[in-house]
Image: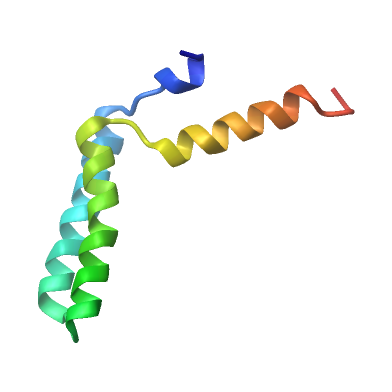
Length: 77
């Protein structure tokens, strides 16, 4: 396991992700126009909720890994 795979979130970021996820769920119940919109909004709400729950974001890890690789193999390094 590399150092980038061990990065976890602090309490503030976890709380803000959970808040955003819950707000997306509340909005989806309030403004669902069709079943497809309702399902899409719930799917969008699950990502911040799950990343807040496990305190780990796979997209963040991928971005950081690519950034490290670009710096590592940069011709200006």
